[in-house]
Structure formats: C-alpha cells, structure tokens
Image 1 (cartoon, rainbow, N blue to C red):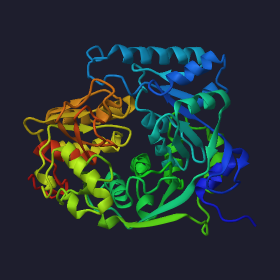
Image 2: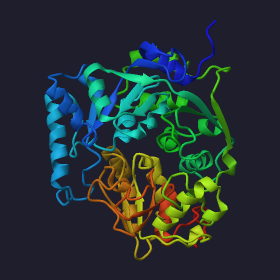
Image 3: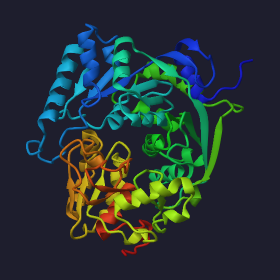
Length: 478
C-alpha cells in the first residue's frame, strides 16, 4: 500500500514527467507538465522575444490565454485614459505576439477583459487537479479550485511556452486549519490578513499551504480565491483547498467549462482530490474563525496588521528582530506609536485588484455605501476585476449605488493596486485599499497604503478615516 499523500503531492505526482534528483521528497527536482497559463502584457514580452530569436513556436498555444490588465487605463471614458509610450508599446507588442504565435488575447476592448486571476476562473479555465503557472505571484489564487497555481519568471514563461513543461522543485507541505465560523461583518480578507499577521511574511516560505476546516468549507468560491490569492504574502509558493460540491457547481456554470460528457467523467475524479486522512504535513497551524476581527495594516508589509480596534504599535515593545522594520514602516507611513487606528484619516479609498474586485466584493461595499456619501476630501474609486464583473454589477444597479455615494466607477484592470498605469497615489497620500500589498511605493511613490476588506474600504470612505465596519452593521455611523 502506498504511503498517505497530501493533495499537493498528489497533483504534483500526476504531472511529473521525470525526476532528476531527490525523488518524492521536499526539494525534489523534476520536470513538471503544465496544463495552462495566463499571460499579461507586462511579464510576457521578453518570453515571446526569446521564442522569436530561437525561431520556436509555443508547443500548445491553446493552453494559454492573454489579458491586458497591468498597464491599461481604467478611466471610465476609454478615450480619456493616459498611457505613456512604454505602456502603448507593451500592449501593441502583446497583441502582435498573440497574432503571430496563435495565443488568444483579450485586449482592453474585449467584453471579457479583466485582471488575469479574475478572468481565468470566471471563464471556466481553472479546473480541479490542474497545474497552472503564470508570470504573476498571485497565481496562487487558483488553489481555491484544488489546482496548483504558482508564479514564474520570464525565462520560465519562455521555456513553458516552448515545451509545456517546467523544471520544478517540490515544496514542503503546510496545513492551516480554521475552525468555527466567521462572525457577522468579518470576511475572508480579514481571515487571511490575520493568518499572515500571525505566521509572518515568511512563515510559509518553501511550502505549499493547504487550507482546511469548517470555516473554509463554509466560504463561497470568491471568498476562497481571496484567501488563496493572499497566501503568497506569508511566503506560500502554492495555496490549496480541496475541491467540493461548491467548486463543481461553480465550474459547471462557466462559459468555457468542459462539455457535459467530459464533466461527468471528470467529477468523480475531482471528488478524490483531497489529502489522505493520515497524510503528513511539515507544518501545522490552527485558527478559530470566531476570534478574527476586522483587520487593517498599519505598516509596509502585509504582516504588519492589527484589529481595527487596536493602536499603532510602539517598535520598542516588539520582539528585537522586528523593531527596525517597524520603525522604518512608521516613518514611511507617517504614523506615531499608540495612535488609535480609527483616528487615522485617509485621502483615498480604492476597491479593486485580483484579491477583492469580484461581484461579491462589490456587493459587500454597496451594502455599506447605500444611502451614504463619501466624506469630503476623500477621492474614492472602484475598478471591477473584469468587464464581466462590471456588467453584472451594473445589471444589479450597484454602479448607481457607488456613483451616488461619490465613488468613481471605473473600467477593469489592476488600476491602483500597483503604480504601473495612470491610477496612482501622490506622495504622502494615504489610501484605504482592498488590494494585496502595502509595500513602500506600491501604489505610487511616497503613497501610504492600508490594506483591508472592501466593506472596510467603503466604511473608511464614508467616515474619512479607518473605521470598524461593524459600527455600520449595528446602525452606528461614527
């Protein structure tokens, strides 16, 4: 009888072509088959140039999808956005590469255009048991479907396109179990931020992290994607959740789902994709969902986070190995120790990104914003995760809620998640953001980012300061 295996090891074993060294152990160097990839205009140009110089073609161009998402403008008027010459060249070359190499590209005018990690699942291109490698670290998102997803560099993109394989090193296994249920007003974003805070920015380095427990099972697919998306911020190279009936139902409804006959063949196999009961994990961590409060970051790393009811920490009270980073973060963020987080005023509010710009995220924000107005002096923006999400939100009338509240209703793209387009913070501007990273300069040179859930962003936009969203759920507007 074979030894018990984790879900991660099962998927890797099913895609292993050959082993070079260290068979079946962490660090094993192997040749791995890749099922699918998604390409963007920012990380793919050098890979395509390499193929051109070597006179190679993609081995399986239909296994790739390209989307324009990083450098495009999200201005509501398609003709009014500002693109620099570099962005124009990137987009033009991306479209040229799609034509020349037979890769489907969704350009900025395609009704399915959007952020890659939103578009792939909503089209039905992510299936349980797959291995998906892409030129973006948040490819961990696909673990919500029981697929192994991970980010790769440009040279690896070229190799993968040419051969549909990668040289890969097997990871260690880590399991994070979340018991109980999230309290009212607490979201998947709060859950993963608390996990990152507890285990640290490098707590899962070198590991594939499997999320388990009744709190995870209770979440819908969009919430699960949020957790897997941000797992990379605690060092996870891969994030995974065992696929269940919610996954099967979600996939079956997608426009590019397998045919009914193929689904009937696949579903019994998908139901076997879970870790064996006696599988061994190199690390284990346990959390109780009912203990998790609304979270917000105060520093310049996703693990520098606290409950919204807390105060900015004093570096001198932190462990010695964290004091220097905390002091630097407070200096950059312009904050003083012991300041109440709810006393911190904001200049900007942003809802978007591959972490939190799906339809359920927009509904959460709309519930807070309905009948309210953005505070004077705050500029608020929403960039839906895809054009399909944007249309669905408009069909429900969410766009009217946002516009009446004072939010800019923008088009789809990475937008203010990162300063690679015409949406960026000015030096010193402070932003409540539903994105995934609060690094120095991430949203613009000198910009100051506080990560939180979309509902928390909406609450901050209305009050003009970081705010406990639970005050709104009880009818208190202060």
